[in-house]
Image (cartoon, rainbow, N blue to C red):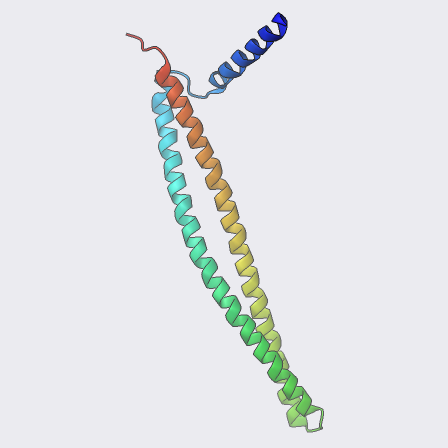
Length: 157
């Protein structure tokens, strides 16, 4: 029983001191370097937040454009279908119009597909930026812990 208690105490002590060994900044002399990295991280976080906000605005524009392009593609497809029905009755003029409408419907469908791709790309970009922001915020918390550990060190006089 005494061995188990000692082992648990040793493991706890090891875990408590491990973070101090792993720290990049350990002494009061490292405070300037820590502050420099801290400020750089804060600037990066602010920049990422601006980028995310801009991307969200762009995403809304892409979604509106997608709705518009889908509507255009649907109406073009209907018009093409009606024109094709007329062309089946025989006149060459109607067949040429049907071909034009079909080409227009195809182009509108491609535009809708491109708008969807743009929206999807913007969503991926936002996810990537959010992950990067999360990593930077975690590093900022690590630096806060390092700063606290340095502040707890006995001051040399």
